[in-house]
Length: 198
Image 1 (tube, rainbow, N blue to C red):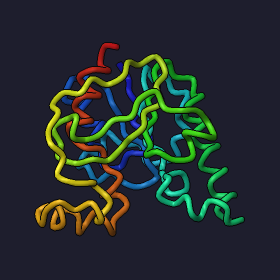
Image 2: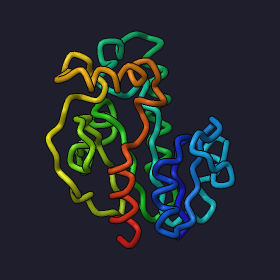
Image 3: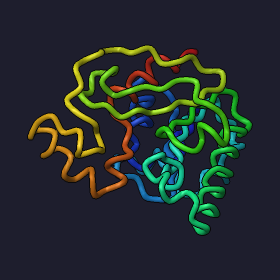
């Protein structure tokens, strides 16, 4: 199975599928930080959607789509940027690929495109955080939680801190959008395990 992981420079999902023996490639305009440039396409993913992929897992940037920025959505320049982001999402969802999963936080996609098929949290997959993540699915089953544990706090909101350990781990994440947007390993493992043979 040939799998495209769109908008992923971390290669976390790519490596999870590679560990299962699948031909997976990350694709992003940024160089890979996951240590495997031989599995990375550094380019605009829209230029590679028709290259015979069996599955695509897409992580489009949420800068202009997440509800975290909803207070700014009505500003004229933000309206243009948001429409461009929604157009990109629609191109990904309508790609000529049999199986598609698109993930993003709760936000504009939910109302401007369609409601997600599933909302998951890291704590359902062995990671001690809450971070609601929506999944829009095409010919893929909903993910089944693999290891539900007690969450320690919200991954990106310092106001929900429950302990100092969370605060230390989040100091980097709050200021680095690439760190905040990385897929949790537990979720990547579940995708590779459950979507390898849907």
